[in-house]
Structures are given as structure tokens and as C-alpha cells.
Image (cartoon, rainbow, N blue to C red; front, side, top):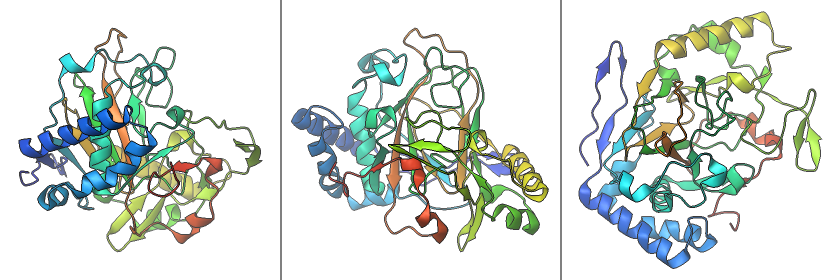
Length: 348
């Protein structure tokens, strides 16, 4: 792989780009094809259990080059997967009809995730699939989910409501002919006062599950499986030895009951995240790797056509074992009853 590099955009550096060596790309694709031939579908339990063994056979140089650097940028673009329109088929008109469309790239993405940590998923999202298809869907244009298109998808931490949210988010570009940008802002590039950081480090406001999940928010309680649970206030920011970290999803945050100092600090944080935002227009075969504790991400509005050529991303989530830095208080959170899938731990 080439050494990471960046292009300056004003005072804010752009995300580093790492170029995937063609030999490594070919090895990834060959390994993914072999797993699909053996197991038939990306979510087969045997395939998921085999990911670690396959990833362990990657050259050490390859795995070292994939290793995320938890720097102030908080993200990088991996470029060079040989994704081509001719082999993809049309962009699905919603995740529920996607099936195994682009299944080879599901497995490639899972192998990349396994080289970085533990691939993980959610039983309550997209029928428990480990790789999610992010495509515009008719009737969902104005939602604050990945199925939207005509509205700005507000910056957010992925699955901010849950204490076991991913450490890393991987977004792989299948198709993006119009250059629709993913937005990304690193909290470590913001300029916040110590007073604002202190105000936002208090657990003041709950973050609810977003509309992509099977649970639904109620006025005073949130449905969780067979029962109900009360929303729990969480911290928005917390300092670590490596720098500031963030848990942020304003579209699903309840601000009633918060004090003026918290709301004013939150507004300044939103302004700062807007100031340092990067517009990352992923190209076909790019993978955006995001530190989910440092970078909030979203998407600019676009007009979907539903003609098979719309923007199409695939999403995978990674848990990095033994990574530290989140508040100990998160261990007591209920996560609104949403179970995590970890094929290395829960017998998936």
C-alpha cells in the first residue's frame, strides 16, 4: 500500500487516502469468492466463523496497512477494490429487496473488518444482516436514515444510542456516479472551550434508537423486546489520553429536561462540527474507514431516480477488542434491548 496522504482543504485536512496494492486486492477477492462458493451466502454461520482464519492468512504488511490510526483525522479512504458496474447489477430500490445483491463485496468487506477487529451487526436492523445495503428507498426520502435521499442526513455517531456501538464504521462504495458526498467531521478538529467540554461531559440527554431499528420510541418509554425501558441520559463528549471523543445524534436526542448551559454548549458543538466538515465523494471501490468515537458522519441531499443507477454503499461495523476510552458508566446502559451480533462471541 502507498503511504497515507492528504489534501488540504482550507484549515482542515482532508481524509488520508491509502491505495490498496493490486496483489492484496486480488487476494481479498479470491478469498471472498472461495468463501461464497463454500457457504453460499454472506450471512451463513460457517462463513462468519471462517472470517478470522481467512484474515489471519493475509500478509502482515497488508494487515498493518489496514490498521486504523486513531489520529485527529479519525478516518481514511481505502482505494483500489476492483468494483465494476457490469458485475453488480442494478442498485436495489431498498435494503429489503436487495437480497444477496453484490454478495461478493459483502464478503470482501467482512474480510476487511476481520483484519481490523471483530465484524459485528444488529439483530434489529436489516433482518440481522452483517453487511447493510445503504440505498435510497421509495417513500423514505425524508427520513433520518440511510434510506433517505432528498434531505440532509444529519451528522451522527453510528448507533449512538447503544453502549456496544461499533468502534469502526466501514462504508464501501458500490456505485456513486453523481459523486454524492458523505459528510464527516472530527471532534478533534473543533475549537471548543473547556467550559463547553465540561458541560457536554455531563450525562444530560438520552439518545434513542433511530428509525432503522425494529423498536419504536414512545412518549415516555421505549419499546424493547417484550417490555419497556426508560431512556437513559448519556454523555456527548468525554476527554481521553488520545484526545476528545464524541457520542452524537441530534436527530434522535431528547433535549427536554436539559439545562440552558448544556443546550448552548451543544449548539456550539454543532456549529464547530459544521465548520470542520469534510465532503467525501466516494468513488466506486472506495472504502471509508471511520473512527466512530471521533468522527460524526452524514450525507448531502440528492435526488434518487430508482432506475438502477442510484448511489449504493455497503456498511460494515467493527468492534476493536481491548480498545479503551469510553466512560465506565456505559456498562450499565440497557441499549434499548437491541442485541449485538458478534460471530466470534455469540454463536452466530
